[in-house]
Length: 200
Image (cartoon, rainbow, N blue to C red; front, side, top):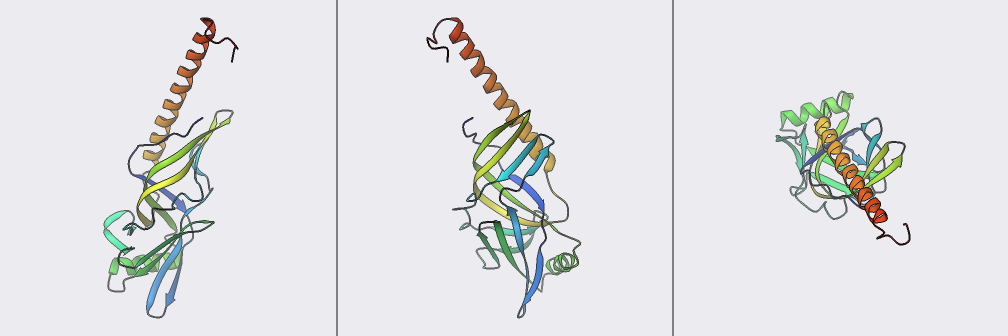
């Protein structure tokens, strides 16, 4: 199956991931992984999605925000301002946020992360390149190979828009199955009309 370029617009994915808090002089830091490579995101029982190593290459130089619960009014940090650092390594997308002590929302979140009350992360992005893998037995997997752009990363209380992601992937699968059925029909028609001399 060839690469399938997804064009569903902005995507959100969430994962349970342990963040850590630390103090660096006078600065308060929240840091951890916002995405982990090759870690299955379960869409439904027989369908998963993974982000492949290198998926964020080339998109981390943009102006990216760190948000609370994807709320654009609650900005924790920003790459342009030097208050958010993002980098891709062999494990995934790592980020470090410098917390503004004068921001009560940020300080409240810092305390919740420190206590372990908030421990999920998410990222908002567009899919530029991905591959569909038929695993057989009715099982399948999407492999995201290129993200562009990366809009934001968020520290979240609850995963967001999971239902939207599942609906989009169901639509993807239906389209893939439609294409496969059309290809099979064309092949059978060619055989029946003698157009395929070798029977392949």
